[in-house]
Image (cartoon, helix red, strand yellow):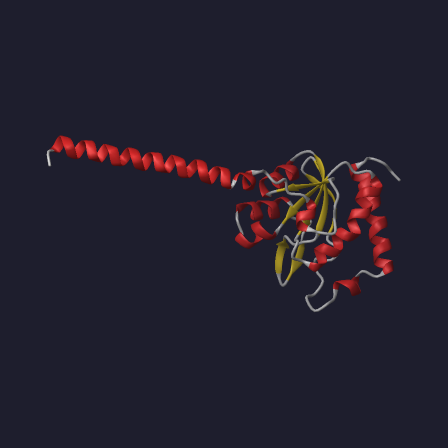
Amino acid sequence: MKPKTKNIIRKTIYGILFLAMIVAFVYLSEKYADNGDDHVITINDYYQNINNSKYKIIRGSKLISLLQEGKSIIFIGSSTSEAAIKYIEELDPIIRKTGVDKIYYYDINNDKAQKNSNYYEIRELLKGSLITTDGSENNLLAPSLYIVDNGKVKYYNIETVAIKNTDKIEDYWTQEKESAFISEVTTAINKYYLNNDK
């Protein structure tokens, strides 16, 4: 076979393969078009019994910027933790009642499992507002609630992060504890976030 004929056959094969790839791309794009719709993650994706649009889901980098400037309420949770699930059930009515415009939700699971730079920077920014367990200082744990204003933690609540694994979360939240929690968090939100002295 002559080199010129080989060259024509090669170009024809390449052309056919290129067209086949385009057809496959168009076909697969249309077939999976519904999967391309952006799904906005809501608090309900983490906690099925919470449906409140005031929660804004954030990642580690956004949390870092919130901790450095501005005024915000931040809930650090873990959708796999019974303590965090119960905590948000106690917190949600307070958020609704106080008239808070938004509360940022950061799920700790991914960054903590990876022990990535976000995890260590968040831990450093919250130093002094974290819990010490098992001889380790500054443990970033969930659930925890922070009110920050221009880089300063004005209030934090780490109510149930130190509960032992052997304790049941339902036993912790007595009616007395619930009342104290509601009173404390409501007062803190009014004072440090809403600038009310109620």
